[in-house]
Amino acid sequence: MLLKNLEHLEDYVSGTKGDETFIRLSSNENNYGPSPKVVETIKKISSLTYRYPNSSYNELKETLANLNGVTKNNIILGNGSDEIFFYLFMMYLDENSSILTIEKTFTYYRILANILGAKVIEAKREENFSISCENIINSLNSSVKIVIFPSPDNPTGVITKRECIEKILISIPKETIFILDEAYFHFVPQELYWNSVDLLKKYDNFIITRTFSKFYALAGIRLGYGICSEKISKLYEKIRMPFNISLVSTEAGKAAISDNEYYSTILKRILEDKKILIKELKNLGIEVLEESYGNFVFIKAPEELGNKLFEKKIIIRDLKSFNYEPGYFRITIGKTEENKALIKAMKEV
Ligand code: PMP
Image (spheres, protein in one colour):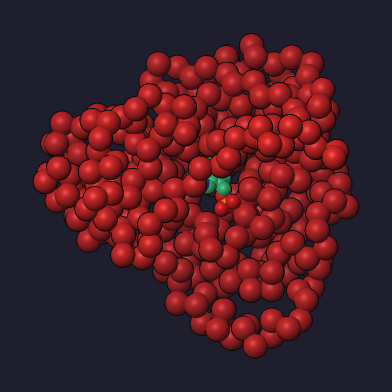
């Protein structure tokens, strides 16, 4: 077997337990669901699913390139952004190399690195959970071939400033890639948003990844994309599976991008409801991290909260698998009535 120690690998713990009778606030999905245009498109395309997709994926790539002011040769596609990480990790890691990430973040980076036998270096956060570019830079060594972390971060929601990202880019060797995981970037308020795509002009070892799973409410479709230099996308095209994106995903993705009106209405509602939820949680005496910019909140509460809510058919995400101490939870902003049900249940428990 080429890959070793597989039986000792940690399993990925997902937040997707419970069935449709539960209110699921544990996976940062967009509970409003996809736009009606997407649903219509999927229905239409269903009779054509006997065909393979066009393996160049040029149309979807063009659409994403236009959306981001780049060319289609700067776009890479994955069956979820998870698959993009997988391919990039395969491309850049071996048993003598490491990834550099931050402590207590999205767990799949470390799981993937472990699958490939690479080491994982985790830079410490600041006391307030924010990401320290100094700690990241100080943790660099010659084995680091990939630097990766999310902004907004999962599970804290903290965001990282442009200056910090650029300092890291300046500090790493050209052969090391820096993947900025922007799964939640749509939820960052306008006044704090900065466009990371600009940095691609200066750094061809920089890669931004995004997903249709959160804002576009298409987690079940599995579609993610990356924006990177042509040099990296050419290599990526060599190793990806010929048909890694389904026909349904390509069409659903294009339809989602075309319905700005639907998604901006939903976004407004989620961000307004988030403010209300934070206020209500604080009224209940729960510690809430306010500098947090995803479609979720990061809280510290009595340890038994998760189980008590589960009994009431509401699922939130316990962060023990992210290496947080007991009592830390992440709660997705659901539909207005779901958030109300959550607060009602929290008052009862
Ligand atoms: N990055 C982060 C930070 C995430 O939280 C998630 C999903 N929970 C992903 C990537 C993976 O998303 P996808 O559904 O696109 O694989």
